[in-house]
Amino acid sequence: MKLEEKFELITRNLQEIIGEKELKEKISKKDISIYWGTMPTGSISIAYFFPMLKIADFLKAGCNVKILIADLHAALDSVPWDLLEKRSAYYTEAIKLILKSLDVNIKNLEFVKGSDIQLNKDYFHDLLKLSTITSIKDSIKAASEGVKSAQGENIKLSGLIYPLMQALDEEYLKVDAQFGGLDQRKLMVYARENLPKINYNSKIELMTPMIRGLIGEKMSSSIESTKIDLLDNENKVIKKINSAEFTEGNPNNGVMSLLKYLIFPMKKDKKEKLIITRQKKFGGDILYKTYAELEKDVIEKKVHPLDIKNSVAKEINKSLEKIQTAKLKKLYSEAYPEK
Image 1 (tube, helix red, strand yellow):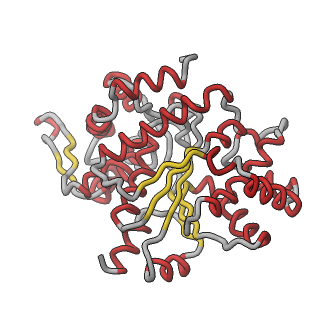
Image 2: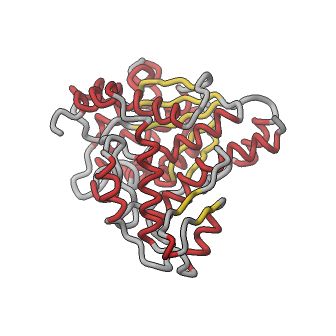
């Protein structure tokens, strides 16, 4: 693969890159290593398809990818300690199934459990080192968008430890870059600025845009109405999509975000077009090759929101069928006994 093609695969659909020059230099010399971390907290939604599409890009570009199942981070962010192992198992299986549904070769993919690298004495020694050079103000700032326990009036000490650990994860995972959403930016900047202070090299930071929820500005695992769960049945998916905000003529909504960042990229990789099914009296079916074509028709009110919603629900249900295995359902019931 040519260097330009590799760079394009690694960087497409990213919102921001901190260290772009470093990235170009490194990929010209070797296959780089990238990590993406996730806390096994709430049940997984289709929002996980977005980072998985990027991880698919990294793997296709020859990168070595590590997925950190951040169990200790989850505990610091309020998950009961006795459920960490079960939620980690559920997350690992769900992520594998999503990647499998995207036809990704996972030969260069490795899963790492946070507690396996974070409970050794060297890591703890470095954590204490970072604590001596990090102010409470800076820690709160770093954690302000991505860590629940560092938000609100009753900020917990665990929330202040979180940014320090995420910075050290970059070093102890032995990677060249970290990948995450734009809500992780302050955590990543903290790592860039502070790892060199304890004699470690800063890493490249790769960020995707935040995706709108079906209702409101942000897709959130903690707000049921804004997300579609991996184990939602067909009727529930249809109901949630039909209830989503979508004003005719306005493409700025969660349904169009699903199309832009999930459905069209998947169609493109499979060399397929999106079919918007309509009755003949309303003009019949329409085929779209790109998101830009659809967005133009939405703005010009040439296609109705309900027809788009029906097609989106159909596409999502098609993807979820491949993931909703008996094994995943069992792991879910063990990980979330209260549900």
